[in-house]
Amino acid sequence: MRRNGLNLYALGVAIVVALAPPMAAMLGSRCGRGTSIPVPPPGAATAARSTAGAPICRAGPPITPGATPDASYAAAKRSVAGQLERLSREYRRAGPMHRGRVVHRARRLLERALRRHLMPHWCGTPWAFHGTSQIPRQGRIACGYFVSTLLRDAGLRVGRVALARRPAEAIIKSLVSDQYIRRFSDVPVRRFVKHLHAMGPGLYIVGLDNHVGFLVVDRGRSAFVHSTYLEPSRVTSEAAVTSPALVASRYRVVGKISADPDLLRKWLTRERIPTR
Image (cartoon, rainbow, N blue to C red; front, side, top):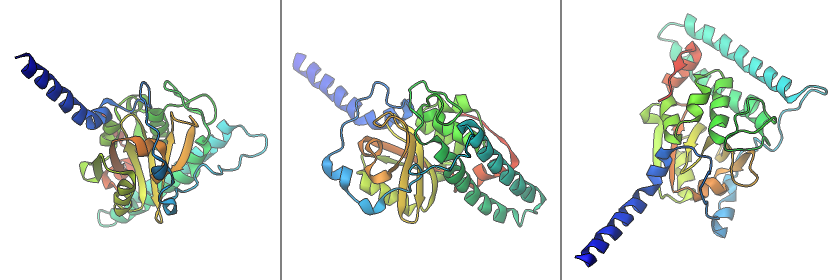
């Protein structure tokens, strides 16, 4: 009986371990707290350099001499808000037959707003598990707050605090319809990136075992833009295929926010997006 009991115990442990990746992703975007991330093998860190990510954090937008980062970011948000308002008016005036064209333009605007106007300002902002900064390069910001703050500043009516505190997969499900969500378990990072490119260029949110951030796919290149708890412990943009956090995660869930017409419609109509 004792031997059978030990065997049953071992079987239970094996089942828990086997279920660990998806359970970890469902537990939340913990930004690495209490998590030991293995160092990726040398081959993974140097493979597929041809898919290097877009240099979002290589050179941020210039800051007017004498202006503070706060003022510069505020100007970027006003620019995005102005473009969104003009497109929203077009959407309201367009008939049902023509609104699809406006939504298609909204996809490009959302990508441009986040990639060119907002994300570069945050590059270099220090990470902290409890970081809640709303101003780039001032204070610290956690991974979930980085995602929710950028979405809010782009004009999406999300609950910044409520969304940031949700598990990574719940963040994605709050924003994106099921048909635009894909899940990958124990898939090598190069194969994952290949699947990602097959989903097409655009802007994604990706949830990992204990982390969340943005993925940018464009012209055969993919970048992971996130507030990383690993070195250098700040907001950064990395080639997806060599990002230590992406390489190490056993579970990955992605939602293509720039492809979901329902999310884009909510953005154009200023509809509130509840947190799930």
